[in-house]
Length: 510
Image 1 (cartoon, rainbow, N blue to C red):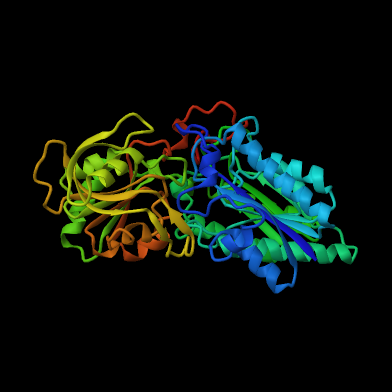
Image 2: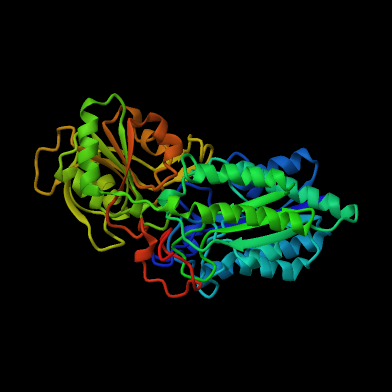
């Protein structure tokens, strides 16, 4: 049995300031670099990505794995035409080569589901269209998705099953890849027995869910996942795919969606209708806000004075996992202004400042125009260089364990307003990197000598993913809004291409 596997992952923010080009896929921060057929299996096997789960299942089944192309880029603006066409061409060429060597029994793909490419707002749908043009309509194809997928009808029509992760933070990426692969093997078995593909149903939800309200560790989303599991079992579904949507993509397919796969059309329809009804009934539960940075910092300082564990702050609007560049300085400026003693911020993505710190060396004091490369608002600071690394480490947390990270030249600095000459007190420290990564893993800190659990305040460029590794060590978690493109309220964005009737805020205009 010959099974082809590959992946093409990107989460695209239509309004992010910087596009996503070829080089962002070739060498992303926090994930493996682009893989071609000769290296894919061995490079991905020890990681936490969905393809690692697929490899494990296929090897256990004694299948021959036919590797294609795999790549990931950190969320940012839409994928450039050049990058999309080059990567799609690599995928199709590898698939063509695989077919030249012999028939395939099935295909598993690791996709994100929220990629917007120049010319193709439903980029995964377009990729699947091209793949179907090569393999034909009969070859079994299953796909794992990030639950932030903007799952479209085209995607549902072109795959035998779509399997989103169940969790946010995404601690089940590898299990989702394994489950999609198990369904692929079952689909192949059914075909050999003359059974039809699963019946499928699809529905869209008419309101956007803010990113900060999508965490599956707490209500309301934890209860939705419980209901999803109940309905899947009650109707005997092979899969009840629930995607939360990525509310920053400006195209008609943006938003929350459900797909059901079952033995009969009636069962698939009933499962999807049941989950849609539950979400519609609980729409007001998803409305929520975050604290302004000034209030959040004041609260963190007050709690930290008597706490035995760090206060963890999330700079949600500059989340590199949602399209932020990881370089805005609003929260950092507020930490400095309020003299947040014992605070450390991870990270500021600023290659120029990182290079200056490496040139100056450990112990040096220098003035920096820190961050602000994406929004034109750098922060003038005086910094002392405390530690330097090459930015290479292996992630250790529940979401990314085993993933190789390469953030380029990295510096740990202690900062004060520019011109200050007393920066030896505990003050505020910052990790400055050359390539961006969401601060979702403690290894980002420990690799440069900072133990997160020993800090008074830990500030993170993240919205929700940080909770998997940092919430267990936190006295309290405070999510704050400082300037950045991953706005906590998507309704403020200048959308022009959403489908009619979609509510930008839960419960609005009802």
